[in-house]
Image 1: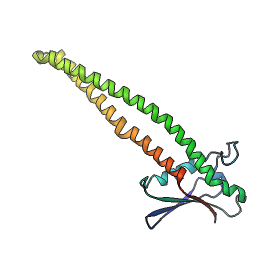
Image 2 (image 1 turned 45 degrees about the vertical axis):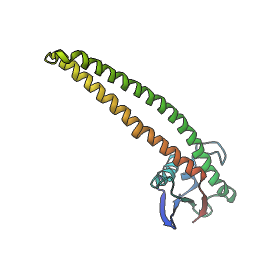
Image 3 (image 1 turned 180 degrees about the horizontal axis):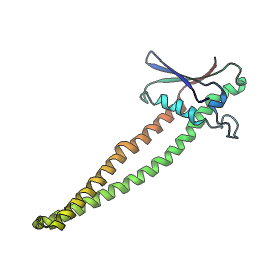
Image 4 (image 1 turned 90 degrees about the vertical axis):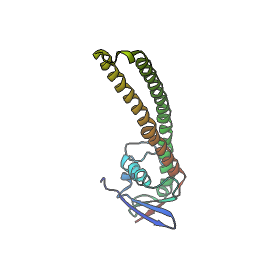
Amino acid sequence: MREIVVVKTEENGTVHLAVRFKSPAQLHDGEDPAPLPEKELTNNAEDAIGGYMDEFSVGKPVRLTIELPEGAAAPDILTMIPESIRHHFAFRSRDLDHEILLSKREGMYSVLLMILNIIIAVIFVCNAIDNLDSIPIILLGGLITILNWVTIWDTYEHFVYDHRNLLRKKRLFEKIIQMPIEVREF
C-alpha cells in the first residue's frame, strides 16, 4: 500500500495539487498513539506532500487537496485532516530550526578552519620561497595546498548547498502550514 497518486494541474497561476491516498492508514502513522490533529503523517505522506510541493517555487501559490476513498473516515476525522497536516509540518519545521542552528555553528567552524589554513599557507609561502628546490618543502607545500583546497571546498559546499537546502526546506514547510488544504472523498 505504498502507492500514493499525485495529480498536478495549474490554473490562473495557481497550482492545484491533489494527493490521493488509498486509505487513511497511508496518511497518518498508525503507530502514533496521539489523537488527531496531533497524529503524525506517515513518511510516505510527508514525502508525497512535501516532495511534490518542492517542485514549485516557494512564492508560487499552491492549493492542496487530500483525497480519501468515500466512507474511509468519519466526517469529523475528515475535518481534522488539514489541521493534522499543518500540525505535522509545524512540528517538522521546529526540527529544522534546530538543524539550521547546528548548521550555522558547523559553518562557522568551517570558516575558522579555512582562515587558519589560509594563514598557514601564506606563512609557509613567505618562509619557503627561497627553498622551492627542496623535496620536503615541495611535499609540505603540496600538503598545505590540498588542505586549503579541502577546507575551502567544504566551507563552500556547506553554505552553498547544505545550509541553503535546509533553509529552502524550512520555507517549504512554512508554506505548507499556511496554504489552503481541502479534503474530499473519491
